[in-house]
Amino acid sequence: MVTIKNKYVLLAAGCWLVGIVLLLIGAWARNNQLPSAGLLLTTGILGQAAGFGFLGFAIMQAVFRKK
Image (cartoon, rainbow, N blue to C red):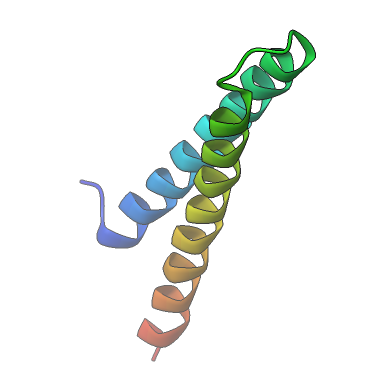
């Protein structure tokens, strides 16, 4: 059974990895001067930020649930 905090850690890892992939694709698109490069780079950075946010939320949940 997956607990709530583990779901957030998995969501954080997924967002972070998708952000890395989008950044790599955006860098390739920028190198080839494609018009979608800016959108891909921005979305990749936002994906990574969301991943770190979910990770921080999961850590805070673990800290405040300890007795």
